[in-house]
Image (tube, rainbow, N blue to C red; front, top):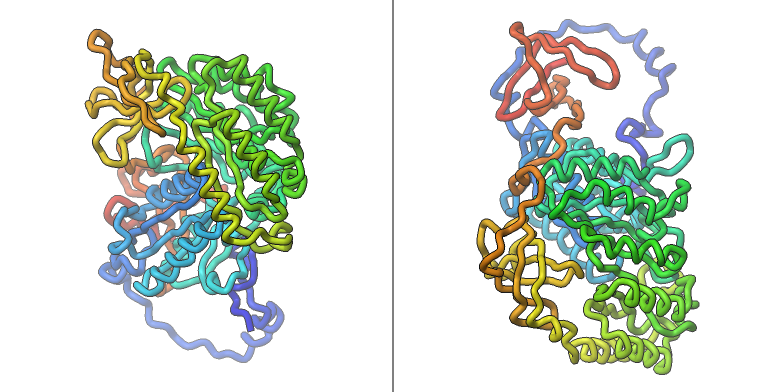
Length: 565
């Protein structure tokens, strides 16, 4: 028999058991009860201070898998938790709770997610799961008893974690709607902790218009829902005010943006360009061929703008029209070629990145060779090669599968072709302007990107971070260039505020109040101290759930304030 936590609910308040007495039954029962006198419980301050009793005092470790959209969701969840008092830690062993933000694109990503759940449980850690796996498959056996945050409910992560800390299981999987219309998701002005304080990831829409037969993400993110242009412009403006120098626009398909709200991607991009200060850059995320075709002229103009990277990620998946039809990709290979050829002509030096799936059901050797020929023709500098994995519940999982050894061989062959050429050799000797945003994995260099979003490694000098610098390219590798700073030039400082410190929360002015009850029946509302104005008499008035409430007792604890109501 399934437990109560297995049923899908849209709100914590909806958790009413079918076996609970009705209001009429409760009223009838009260008539036969003789109340006994109760001794007033004294407030035990030591008990109240105990971390185990007060949600918001625990340490949380969060792990995110998958795309930049998922990473943005993770940043928002971390920001809200930190703003409400929880301590985010990079050490999973010292954490009281693990927040696991999953990806459902491929089997290996889900395997890592499932293994992390087991590891947390083995270590007696509390677990909350989020992301596309539990949203798409909430009834999986290994998710039983776990609290779930749906992909459109990330603004309520504090509620879910508060309940999980107290040992309760809560599942929020509903959609955000306004007047019956599905919204893009949680508000864009929520607090967040950027993984890189110099880079802001903005989701411009969620979901898509397609129904690709191999895609499990569609089951989680659903149909297209776009954010209004002015909300996105305001988010970009706030980010630049917080010292961000690079913005990534992301979604399941940026090219489809606006079709549900009567606008389009070029209109959004021209509006955002108005907000980009000199010395900062914008990068556009993945777009499928069908929706970019009708905007090619405008897209070429935008990619030529000095504050927009001349970079576009356009997944082809296969060069065989037969395979594309089985995938339900809604374009033919000539459409893809038209996009690439036009942009290469109108945007000199443009970087086109693409994805390819090897071994899709029904793919013949002839189909695969068409894909090989496409890679030989364009010599893509950035190519994501994926062996096909049948995802449960997708139409492709029911199709006749290509043998595993054939899939592996084709993946290997295409990978060898990709590594047989160096796309950057001709760049050696060039002088370029690059924007420095992060540190290399080996911590030996700073990582910068030129106008074409090609990775350029530069010396680690503190004065370069977040700056546009001029370099001479002296070496080219498969995935990077190396640049030597030009001696006469000085780093250009964008007209931006100083960036936030790593781990610092953005947008604190929008933090909400969080209500919970201790085991002894004391009801509290938790605020971060920065959100309150306290007068001389310690009598606080604040807005909670649209009602003005007067508070007569407060308790300060660490950097938060706990208000007895």
